[in-house]
Length: 230
Image (cartoon, rainbow, N blue to C red):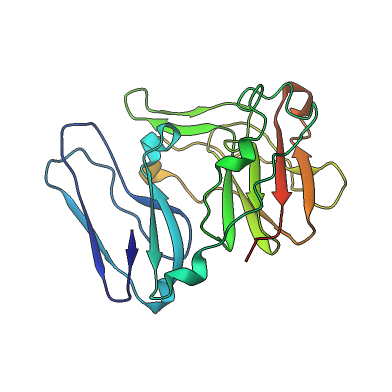
């Protein structure tokens, strides 16, 4: 949703679909509710000028199945809209062994047309928390194998708890993270900050990267940098 400054946004729990929460995973607004299945539970945030921009949020237990939202704050919505060059991308055989992307050329075209200063990729997908099993669901993949962004966009990689040791290493050597593992807490409420690595992309082209430990197992990604049409 798109709102102006000083708007209060409220989330209300239906109470008939299990445990849910509302938590920021990318963007300026601080959104962090408790994890609950209580019917009629409410959580509210009042946004200010400090929250201007696009904040993406999700339910942590159900992020992997698409329980996500976005809050756009500010009066000039047009300033956030751009149109990408949507020319199909030829990745060659780069994603041939990648489970989430194999057989789906052009996966980068799924990116939103809203301009973002920063985009988040989860390291070790799918990244959902299973409250019944009491554990994080993980796999040696990036949750979004390919992105299409405009020059000047910062990509943030966030490590999923309990996913094991992973890294982000550019094929051309232009960026490289440490090989990191984040220990999983018993629940999302107890989880400490996840490890984050960032890189800002300026040069147009296809920027390929992989996990140094799982590269040959298909843990690969690509950032396609293209100019907007206006």
